[in-house]
Structure formats: structure tokens, C-alpha cells
Figure 1 (cartoon, rainbow, N blue to C red):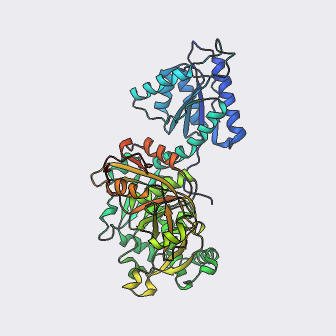
Figure 2: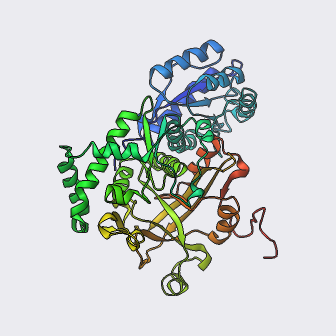
Figure 3: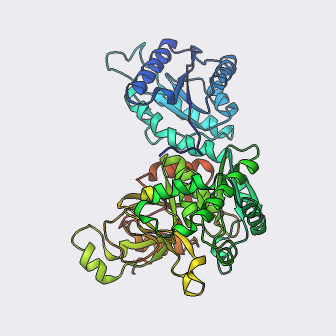
Amino acid sequence: MNMTNIPKVKLGIVAVSRDCFPESLSVDRRKALVKAYTDKYDADDIYECPICIVESEIHMVQALEDIKKAGCNALCVYLGNFGPEISETLLAKHFDGPKMFVAAAEETQNSLLDGRGDAYCGLLNASYNLRLRNTKAYIPEHPVGDAADLADELNAFIPIARALIGLSDLKIISFGPRPMNFLACNAPIKQLYNLGVEIEENSELDLFEAYNNHADDKRIPDVVADMEKELGAGNKKPEVLAKLAQYELTLLDWIEEHKGYRKYVTIAGKCWPAFQTQFGFVPCYVNSRLTGRGIPVSCEVDIYGALSEFVGTCVSDDVVTLLDINNSVPKDMYEESIKGKFDYQFSDTFMGFHCGNTCSSKMASCEMRNQKIMARTLPEEVTNGTLEGDIAPGDITFYRLQSTADGLLRAYVAEGEILPVATRSFGGIAVFAINEMGRFYRHVLIEKNYPHHGAVAFGHFGKSLFEVFKYAGVPVQDLDFNRPKGMMYDTENPWA
């Protein structure tokens, strides 16, 4: 699926050299690195800076101007030898965008005289100088390697850079306050600004007025036709499609009119309690469709949920969703459908659910329905608009970036899977399994006061998300994951 709301990364590769080492080491090793990358990955991802070698501050300025002119929005500083710690870290300091540092390994035992570059040593000085300059840079777990090794590291940096670039040019548009009794979705905005994210907060009345102004919009029939095509046999509520199409156009037009100087937008929307009775439907299906285009729309005015979804969209270059960490798996379901078939304890399992906001492309099967919980107290016709069914099985990453009520930045990342187990329930829902989920639930989600909403990326992206959150400013002690058995949490009772 084409994601239209995330950046395209162009990574500029600049080789540096210390003047008392052979310049040819850096030149030849840079060429080898570029060849290794283009042999294996998309050549459009990278740009080889033709400035022969950065050895001085003047070279640094020349290289900086060149990669800017080439449209690079991310930087790789490549130590082909020991490297000039002043000019290489000045390059990082003055480059406006995410940057990484990597260093060349020695090639052969037969060339350890004039062919020895000592970049293994030079990277230590580079990291120290970066700290002196208060300059952030991504240094991978294995930052020293040959051309093939480092080509893989550059490629692993692409999704990290994509998310960081996206955050720097993101606006979150919200409508209305949180629903009553949803204090868990509290959203202090200070950390948004610290992350470089803009926010525009609007009233539900603003949205309702804009929706009414789209009555009889000439584009509605085309949107309805597209919805009918997407839903197919699942088009069980055809009477509501025109209203949903009107709402979709309202949101898309609002984005274009309000994105301002920002390139990317995500929405934190209101969906109850008055939304259904005033608009005459629930917006879940529209939310799913926009998310499918790379414009995540969170439920219940969950601003940090929308932010988390956007990060996952950038990292995965794919559709994400936002779900409640909702209910336990019944023991009889575990015994019948999971135990002995999958390598998970009962406490590793739970169900993730939302009313119907997950994109159809991530559903095992789906159809338009009405929101069952709301319909218990409201006329059914005003609760139509959910996309319901079991979410497709496969690998997932459950994660969230959050500002706490007292303004601290925290995040968690946990990899797992959706099991091919029928939920026998309603909404957009699935049976999830994450190793040691029971302990993670108690000592991270509860202990650190996370809300019930978690973002879901479809695949294993823990490594990239962890690095994005770390680079973005989440303190390492507040960046959590599901710890394996034998690795205790700080609050875990050793005798429990």
C-alpha cells in the first residue's frame, strides 16, 4: 500500500579522513560501501558526496553545502580511517536532520602497515566529541565493519531516519476534549514540542460545522463507490456510506487547509459520546481508510496514540492500528486453541480490540456493522460505521510513545504475534501473544501508568522503534520492553 503521508529518505554519505592517514583509504572504502549498498538495496536511498574527503573545517562546509543541494535529509558520517574529530562532528552539528556514524574495519592481515586506518579507535573520539557538542547521532550496535556489514547498517538506519524526519515535520490535529472517564488519554503537549511536533486543537463544533458544509459535496458518490469496492460482500450497512464519505472528505479537506507549514499530519478524533447522535454514525471505518493511506487517526482524542501510530507508519512503511489492551483470553479458549499448539503460557496472551478502526488490508475478514456497546443505549441506526472482524494473524510489534501526566517522556516496545485463533467476539479484534506479557503488563503498563491504548505495527520492528525513541529523547530508563524470564523488573517481587 502506498503511504502518502510519510517522508522519503535520502541518506548522504560523507567520508572523512584524518590528514596523517592515507586519504585513499577513505576514498576507496567509501566507494566500496556505496557499491555494496546499491548491489543489495535501492540506490535511490543514498547519495555519495563527491567531495573527495572531509579533512578540515573548509571541507566540512563544502560537503554540507553539497548534500543539502542534493536534497539529502539524513546523513551518514563514514570514518574511512581514524577521522578528524573536529570537522566530522561539526558536520553532524550543522546538518539539520538525523545522522549516523559508522567506521571502516581493516580489510586484510596483509595490509596493516600503510593500509591500516584505525577507524575502530577514531569512532571513540567521534562519540566523545559529539557529546561535547551536545549533538545527537545514531551509532548502531555494530558500528565498525566492512562494506557489506555497513551497507546493512545504513539500510537499517533508513526507517529510523524516516520516523525522525517525519516527527520534525508533523502536525497533530485534534477535535474535542477526551470523552468523560478517559483521563488515561491525558496529553500534556510540552513533550510534543520537545519532539518537534506541532499540534492544532479544535472543538467538536468546528468539526461538525465543517461536516455540515460538505453536505451534497459532488465528490461523495465517488468516495461511496470506492467504499463499496473495498467492502465488497462486507457492505452490510449501505445506508450509512454517503454520510461516511461526507465525513472522510471533511477530514481530508481539513488536513489540506490546516497543515500549514508542516508536511505530515495525523488526527486525534472524537467518536463518542455525542458524536453518534449528532453526526448520525460512528467514524471508525473512515478512520481505518485514512490510516490505510498513512494518515493515522486515533480514537477518543488520543493525541499520543496518534503520534505513536505515525511513528510506526514511518518505521514500517505500512499500515498500523491503535487498539485497546482489552481483555483476557478465556481459559477454555487457551486450552482448546492455544495450549500445545503455540509456545505461549496462558499469561502471555490477551485480546486487542477497538470498535472498528483497523484498515481492511490488515483484517482476516471484515464487514460493516454497528457498534455493539453503543447500541445498548442508543438507536442502532446512529451507531453504524464500524469495520469489524478478526485481525489477520502474523507478527506484530505493540508499542507506545507517551508523555506522562507530569510531563515525562516514556515509551515501550514489545514484539509478538497475532495468533490464528477465532475470537468469537465483536469489533476489530485479535488474540495476541507476547512472551512474558503478564509480567510486562504488571511491571510496565500498570507500574508506569500507561493508558489502555497501544499502537500495533504489523511485523517485528522493535529494533528500529527502540532506536527512534532513544534518539528522540526518551531516557533509557523509561524505554521499556518485555523482559525475558530471569531478567527482573525493578519493581518485581523476587519471591512472587
